[in-house]
Length: 74
Image (tube, rainbow, N blue to C red; front, side, top):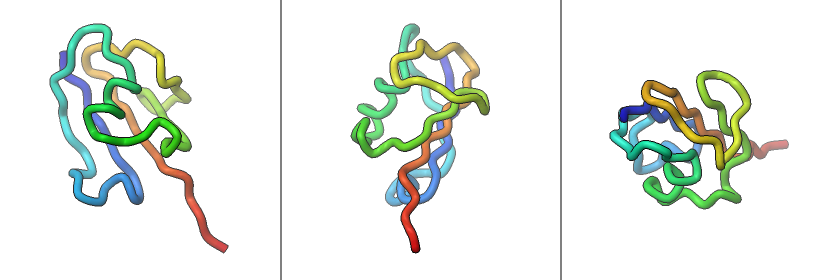
């Protein structure tokens, strides 16, 4: 199945900001973290099709996964 992964802020360093990935049926956002070498603790917000998601939720063909790191500043 294919999903679209959108990366924001520091997650774009050394990666494409948006990519279409072929993944196995039953894949979860946590599987995508592993494929992209992103630690689960580094993900502050994840959205699936624009809605709040969970790292263990099963993804479906055509889903859009958006990953955001914590935002700092002051």
